[in-house]
Image (cartoon, rainbow, N blue to C red; front, side, top):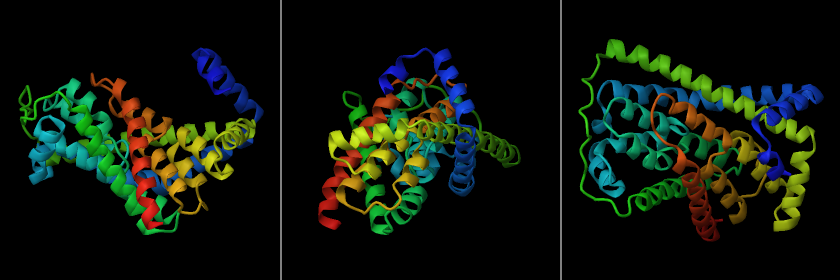
Length: 324
């Protein structure tokens, strides 16, 4: 069924979406409400400060100073200019798509080439600790230790992904091809960063709400329950876990909410790690929006997030055997 839907041309998909809206308006309304609730309670409070900080990093010329002593080691590990440490750390602290927005800012300022940013995009675009420790660890599994394990695996998978992407490249710390523009005064940089962060937060919220509506319509049409049942029967997954997987592939927040009540078993923790590493289609769309106006290619991002999810899941499944 999903393959048939993917093969349809865009106008046909738009028509299907319209028909689904007309058929289940109440489900769409409830999905939009749930998406707005997620944005108000989790997305905007967690992301907005880091989006502002990301804008200030570029405007004030803080890219190298922010990462401090980690700049040169990370630059050698990733075979990239030292300024890449800032988006990497911002991504690991702020969550999706702060790392992507920070990379885009460095490209616009001339500190990083679009080709380098495209290679580093799946490495720097990550889930933040607030979401992992709070919403997933404590919120879903009722365990801070589970959240810490998920975050450690997530960060380690990002480092491994960066190392794999640098194979065959020189480990010498590179210099940017063009000199970045002179730092702007705080009186100019702060208002610009806040305006840009608010715009980005609204874009992100729009994608979250849209994919929440899409998930609600799939539920109302019976597509989600039927696919979850088939997945559960084929692979022996709990039905609850199968529904969470399908929901999380569309929208990460909804997938995490759908996992509520699952026990912190190695299998369930690995499922959470995969969803957090992959990010969902909603996150991929948010990333595209964050890169608007740049020449950064996203061809590696989808594959990179998939590899990240598999690496995270494998590490968590192995480690959870000893701790849970």
